[in-house]
Image (cartoon, rainbow, N blue to C red):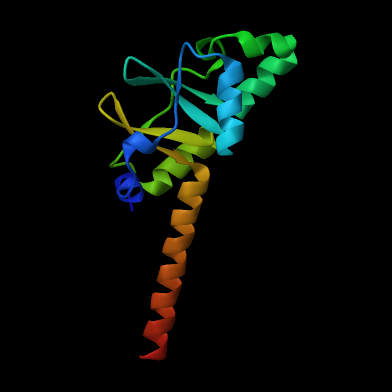
Length: 143
């Protein structure tokens, strides 16, 4: 299965994002209110970075709460690591594991068309394994 299949029923307009110029404080509030771990950071209609819980923790440890008044662009992880719709789920999982990240923007050229988490990929893979196991049980029962 590929990423395109995973996001097929999602609207890109539903992706929650923040601006490169927004304050870290506001991005943190958005993460907390939506109970999410990361946001794609947008500038001029393009994804230019990822702002995550880890970014906040690292900056708080370095400079204290002064970082909350900084622009997201100063704190985000950039450039973003991205995938496209054709990327296989196993490839995306391997990329996330290798790079130690938990979120990936899905892009079509330079346009973001989705945002996935490692949880989305693990659930998809788990559902696939369950389906395969059920098919095998059915095959064995009727052989």
